Amino acid sequence: MGQTFRNKKVIRLSLLSEVKQILRKGKLHTVCEESKCPNIGECFGNHTATFLILGKVCTRGCRYCSVKKGGPYLPPDPDEPKNLAKAAKKLGLKYVVITSVTRDDLPDGGASHFAACIRELKKEIPNVGVEVLTPDFKGSTRALETVLKEEPTVFNCNIETVERLYPKIRLGGSYHWTLKLLKHSKEFNPKILTKSGLIIGLGETWEDIVKTLEDLRKVDCDILTVGQYLQPTKAQMEVVKEYTPSEFEKIKDLALEMGFKHVFVGRWVRSSYRAWEVIS
Image: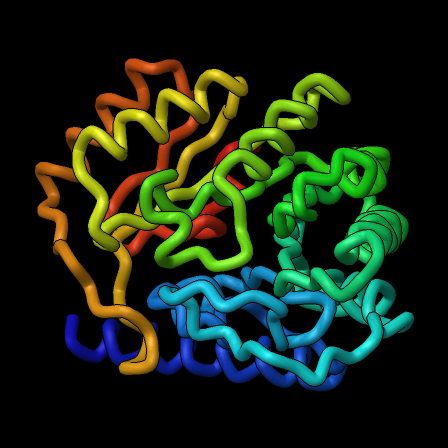
């Protein structure tokens, strides 16, 4: 058994190295690496990655996030959509997740670049599933529609934290912008699944969590992810509370009772973890 485990580990490390080589060759980035996601080994080992487009520098300063902030902000790479599609094909992906740093410096927040990536993926890989995890576009429904017109499988916009904590830890963002986009997506094209994610352990109360889930259901959000906040580096805020498995189970039961179609809850859960399961 020990030898089998070692062999599987060697294979997984080999796949991890292969994925990274393909990404670097295409000058591509993944949020898996930039955000120091705890699931990076498992996802890369299974030829799965969440592509990070529009550069690696964010225009906002959320206190829980380790992605680089503060410029310089490079213009969108016109070759990125094609490079992304080619890499996804080479990796044999059937379900691709695309996200980005927040780019408030761009007129449309990067929406047209998201749209171009979806188009190229559909050209390169027939019947590919595409999930987009976009910024809140400052609540712009016009920017959102640019993305939705390309008909992604899933539109994801993370609520991230509870409304009460937004002024303290999600600087530059708005709780209501996220809800607005999720609501408009359902009105624009009901066939596109909507999704949002919450990280907990930042100082929220049980009542805060319940209210957030209620607000997401009010805009008919289909898919929910809830995970434990883990301090990426000493530069980010410290963990306020560690949730127990039974507490996560309580949140999951509540979410299912509220009517979410798919619920992913647990300590290591992140917004894109096992994302393909919603259409499998």
